[in-house]
Length: 199
Image (tube, rainbow, N blue to C red; front, side, top):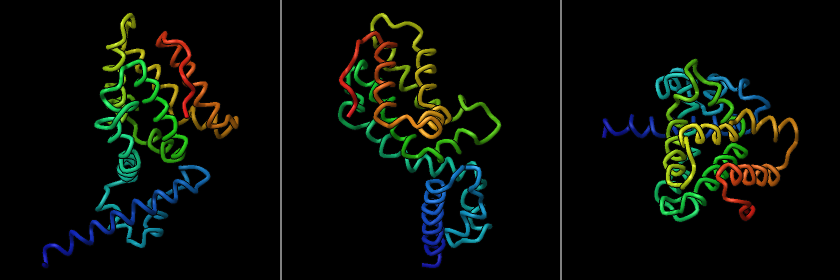
């Protein structure tokens, strides 16, 4: 019993921190405004507890992003069409990008914070490499499409958080219009013609 309580406390503290950070990033005007001190206060834990659990702000943001993205990841890995692995690539590639766009629209400040973390190239981040590999593999299955590696990078650039924020936040492009424009662009890149508009 004495060994289990710290683990329960740690799990409870971690959940409280992630919930607090989620709320703060959702409600903030800029992701840069959210500090570790703010998160600790909102979670009702000490800063020492926060740093012990996550190490630093970057690791906390990555953990929160991974938690928020988990339902999408599950749908991609083992779900039904159009995201799941049994979907034909001409349908799956647009669906994957639409899912990423919707996720970043729903988590704009968190996605911005993640893309701004660290001094390393964002293209070497684990989450980016995972999505690039997924897209590249699907693109390789499309007859006549060359250079799937570059094409995967180019398609992912259309759903970068800073571009999504610029279009949705600063220029006021609606969610529906962004999804339609993305679907049209992806169809042109894939040479598949206009597809049914995303719902």
